[in-house]
Amino acid sequence: MNDRDAERSVSQTVRAQLALRDQILSGSLRPGERISELQAVETTGVSRTPVRMALVRLEEEGLLEAIPSGGFMVKGFSERDILDSIELRGTLEGLAARFAAERGVSARDLAPLKENLAELDALVNQERVSVEAFSVYVTLNARFHALLTELSRSAPVIRQIDRASALPFASPSGFVMAQSALPEAHQILMIAQEHHRVVVDAIENREGARAEAIMREHARLAARNLRLALRNRTHLDLLPALAQAAVRVPQGES
Image (tube, rainbow, N blue to C red; front, side, top):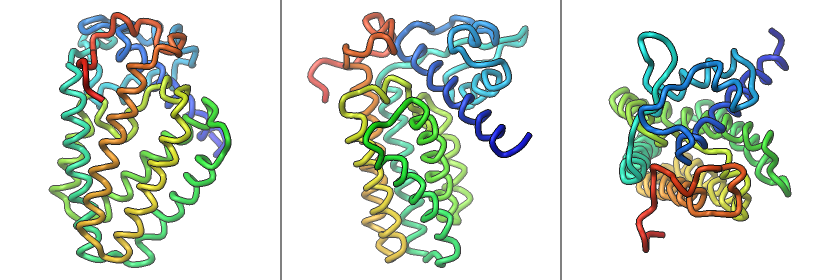
């Protein structure tokens, strides 16, 4: 497989993940419901190999459970579970960023994070973020968070972030496709990218408290983004069963 084929495979896997998360979050796939590889191929329009990888990754994220006889079952979770899980991941990533800043990071070690930041810049600065570009953004964003975590040089923190990322929708990759169609989508990506830029600057300047605070705020932005996807009624083509969603937003919460 050449580089272009490999990139296409990753992109297709991400698209399948986004589509399946949409179905789980919207209630199209309900808790306890079985989903097979063939069913996922039909509902996502993605071929079997990337769908197979997407199902495994969604199991790792705590959204699906493997069935011994084959296939997967959708796991149950509440809206509060989602928000608490995202907050937990943000707290841990804040600690990782503070450790990286306070312990010091060499220019050489920081270079991959800056390169990733530049790639994200090129993407979010586009006037319109297409479905294809959004899929690429998800992959690049996941790499940013992984690189940032590694800079903490703390095995216990890295381990706990991995565990937190296995909770429902807590992963830095835990987007749904509907988010790409929101009117606020581009603005939110720009804010998220500014968070990325600020935390890199804080780490480089050894400002631990600043780095920690921005990563906690970054997680809260992710929670807000997910709530917007749930509340927005304009994009029912992407969230077809939103009205019967198993995950509901309490009245009065913003």
